Amino acid sequence: MLPALRPGDLLWVRRDAPVRAGDLVVARLPSDPSLLIVKRAAWETGEGWWLESDNQRAPGRRDSWDFGAVPPSLLVGRVVTRYWPPPFLRAR
Image 1 (cartoon, one colour):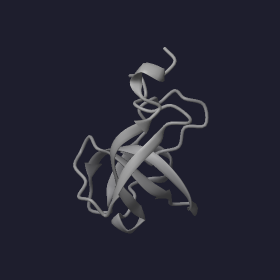
Image 2 (cartoon, rainbow, N blue to C red):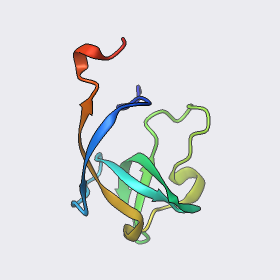
Image 3 (cartoon, rainbow, N blue to C red):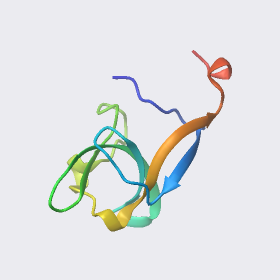
Image 4 (tube, one colour):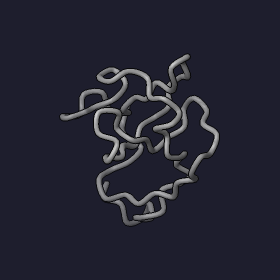
């Protein structure tokens, strides 16, 4: 599966928006809450959301397979859209 985002993409994020399975979300990294991560919400558990990378083979990938479910208090918001660069300017 190709990632939905690439380095340098700018996102519009709706803070505290309801999350559904399949949504891209911004969350605080559980081991270092000063860092933000963008992941796909896979499913909700009793402890919070299971967040996964679109590309499980990416070097340096970190997601719920490494740190477990993310509690709702660490979710920042749901990604609404990628607004830059526009599709016609993206490298193919």
